[in-house]
Length: 377
Image (cartoon, rainbow, N blue to C red; front, side, top):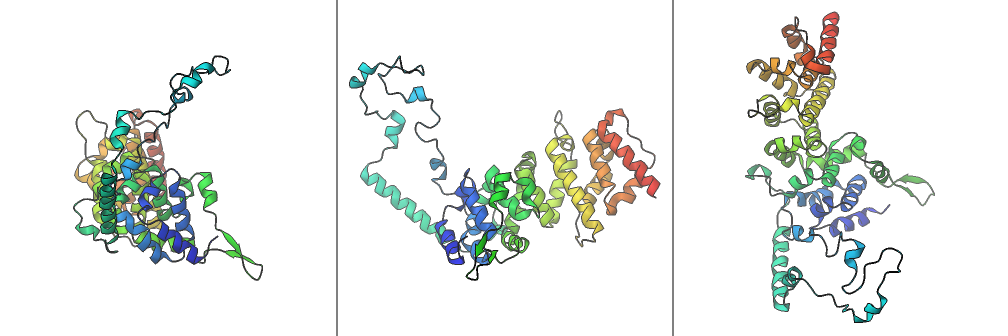
């Protein structure tokens, strides 16, 4: 409900705390709400998103340590010398209260954390210098020249339950499927009363246009993170996998498509379940294939399609037979029949195929899809 000046002050107040807030159980809500109401997307990129291309503050993990006494039971909070209550209060040794030493001694770990006045000044000076160096980093961080994205906070945000919601809000055309009801309510457009006593939207910019402008700043680093950590992200079905899915739907990158396709098709170590039989990889591939099928019907001009790359790998590696022997693999093949660029070629290969009982429910679905496709042709 604030003005543009109010939002700018809020962004200035977030300096050096953006990544930490996005990883916090409650702080991420403020950053998402700011992204949903800001009109000056350039300022948002410079003052908020820029920090996601920097490392997490060195003292962040220290601040994340469990606070003293947090998580303890009520009995453990009772001072030494006082009887533990049964809940009725009758067993409390009230005579012992006068003898209790209420100055709780620090344990050895707490004592080690205490710094002398000189040490505290020295540590404060080091932190101040680090903050100045971090603030001096220029806007246009060259992510392409980075050896690894492990150390930038965007990676931590993408792999965090709270932080990933911020990225999913920006990436997904309809992010409601990833957000809980309270967050959906929070993101409802705010209305303000004008001098003419009319209610208007507090933000003048179209939501989809705002999101496109904001996420464009993170395009290259997001793609780089997905390429370097594809397997880790895929294994996190409700966090990293969703970020990877929406990144691939938004941005076209041939290298990223090849990385994901090879992970899905390439046999794993002996004794390990094939990647395409696992729940999370199946979720990712299925959703991308369905997305690509709809995009091709709408004449999208993309040059690289995951469906095409997977089909080529299945042919070159003779892996199609392996997929057809499993339920989830059969589901994927059935989905490929809906993709215009590969459906005819795939149907020609499978014209005499019929899945057996070993293919489970996926085999039944594939048999129905083959019969339907043959009837249509």
